[in-house]
Image 1 (spheres, rainbow, N blue to C red):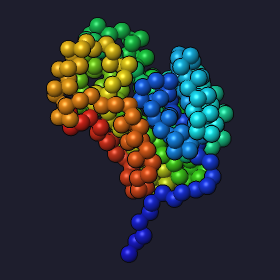
Image 2: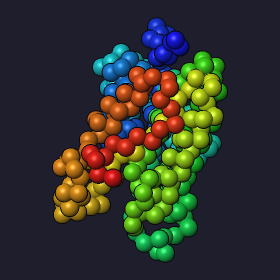
Image 3: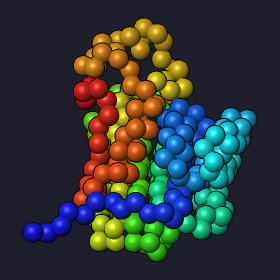
Length: 250
């Protein structure tokens, strides 16, 4: 009988990169990984006032190294600069993302390009540079934070839906490419999560959405973080999956 292959616990230091870690889902993931004992590399594009003290706090509380970077993850030069300072990497969490709500025919070319470079191009840039580090150890986890709209699309969010649909297909294809090398690639398709990204909605909008969700509530960033940790401890055979986390909504 073939022996089941589960991840082994190693005494060597574990390193994780979390993009978009200054607030919301990325911040919750970073703290949860610190609790797991990971040494961290964290990024954000603009909120240095949030990321820098957060990184220091994590380092102090969990006795880990935590290196913050202020960088545009949709800029390949910025991403290359970060990876020049990363000698080893066990986990990559591609969380950085932005939204756009509005009619497609009123969207500017610059707006379209910005959402694609931030939500999709960044996943390519980071994964391309993380893979050689993981190949060295014949192990690794790439986890992409996606959206249910990447599966089914949302009115008034065509560009966002397209970018997340690209992330989902990227996840499935790269998982097939890396499976022989012992690297797992999965995505979490989030539903309505209580983050700053949803501040554009009124209280009435949020309540209407809540009523559509069978779980009868909005999801929390900490729940996404728990799903990330679950994927880290999942059997290696789990790869190429886009896992819905939406309270039964979609």
